[in-house]
Image (cartoon, rainbow, N blue to C red):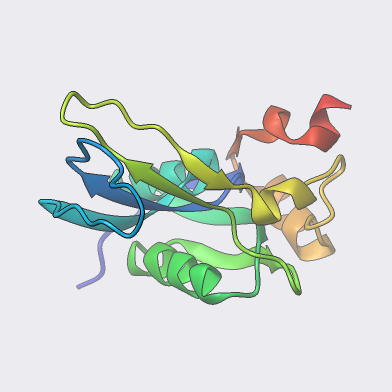
Amino acid sequence: MAEARHGRVVSLGVHIVDVLGRPVSHIPPGQGRLLLDEIRITAAGTAAGTSVDLAKLGADVIAMGAIGDDLLADFLTSVLDSHGIDARLLARKQGVQTSATILPIRANGERPALHTPGSTLLRSRPPTYCTSAARTSLAASPASRCGGCSNSPAARG
């Protein structure tokens, strides 16, 4: 039986794939290696991560933003889909990498970020991924959340 959803939310903004490894005591020199207890890959960013959390809380979530046309985008949309998130309005940008971060998490919880902005840099004001269908969904939604929208170079002006 399908889980009941409560309320619709459009989650607009930054969609990132995070690769997390823990615990990382140091980065080995040269071609050295370090054995870790755990490596995970997740949907992240201020829109994708929030979308997953909202879906877990029972919201009917529509994701909007820019992603690449690569395997990272395939992974990201698969994760969103597995949580029942409508990812059809994510704009796949040709020849662009999906935004991604490697987080070597230290034993004390610190997590320096190794990041490639990729498709996040394509956001503009108004967003180029706001198609007619996207604007209709946004207007029809009783709630929306813009995650990281002020962080893009275009939004800063």
